[in-house]
Image (cartoon, rainbow, N blue to C red; front, side, top):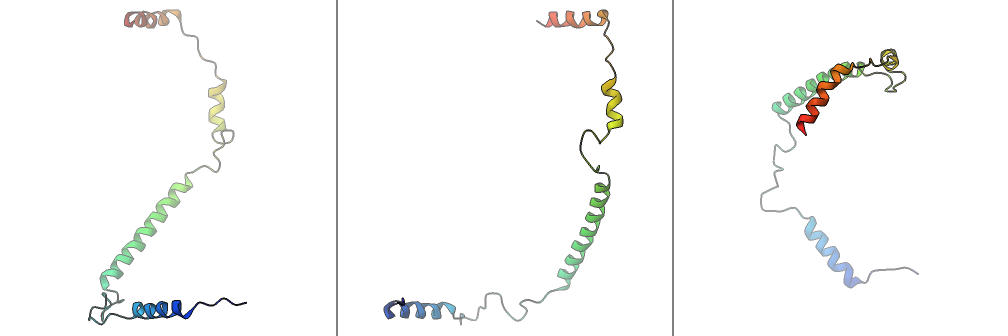
Length: 109
């Protein structure tokens, strides 16, 4: 069993598609005149400037990426620097230094 569209529906669709697909005859080609699609020397200059900018950006990014550590794990990155600070015990604060802070706190209340 095949499905077909009735001729009543096909004719208007075909006619409207032919009308919509035609080019306008008003003389205005929508900006597609004789010079459409041709580039100018200004376009070449802009393209070269963009390429030079990309080269400098890639060089800069490469320099910055060389400074990034291989891993951001806390154990590996800076383990020699972190261990002495973690092992060092804090020095006891003398009682004479604690009293002025406590007195200042009481005055502010």
